[in-house]
Length: 291
Image 1 (cartoon, rainbow, N blue to C red):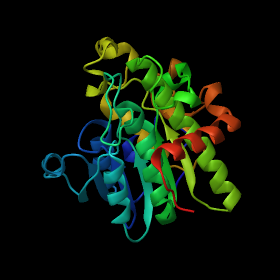
Image 2 (cartoon, one colour):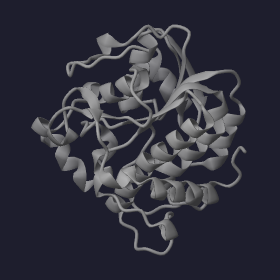
Image 3 (cartoon, helix red, strand yellow):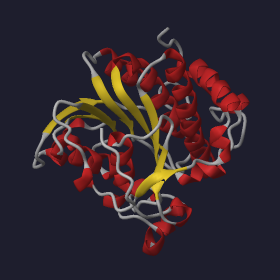
Image 4 (tube, rainbow, N blue to C red):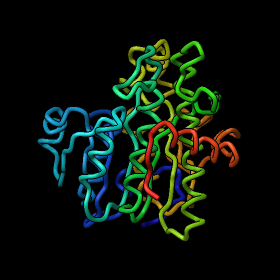
């Protein structure tokens, strides 16, 4: 992969991706679809893991490139395991993009908190199950709001606390950052060349927050990134030669908008002890993992 230090990096700077396979979760719309489109344009075989395959097929029908549409609901651990079990061969890049924001309290088919599972627990399981196939990197999509997150390891799944949608979102995105930290530690310790990389799109004007009180931010265009620009952080994180556990986000003030560059996560996302404990707590929620 190539390295690019300019702050005006765009999708036109993507390297040649022919022969490479990329899995993107939640790629039927929004940032995931834009990322899929651009990587396919660069020559990659892009596998879209989506809840609605028919809708995804329609979304990519007129796009150039090679797309493979497969059912995957990261909030359903049975679906995650089925997707991983069906995988064969190498997988160059996994992009954990699927997510929800500030939704009402709800439980999954497994009895887990829906928002925490969609944003962290499901991607954690998917990554660990696919890791033996991954040859290059895992990209985790997080949010600048992880800096306001607080994780309660005794109640990671929101069973005893009063549920708060925004606090659950912030905590789940902090969990993503800590997951990347611990994953990279384990990869390095094992001598693996695979990298774990974080991507924040800044505040991208997508439908993610459309039902939330935070949707007001989408109307403040001077503070936000257009979706096309927000997706650049994902594309940069997936293709550029950056160190393991790099945090890629917009270069503007606060990381809200701008062009992708290497930034620094919040202090809470750099706690190795918490990252290790979170790994163990999450593993308890999802059940058996590869040894």
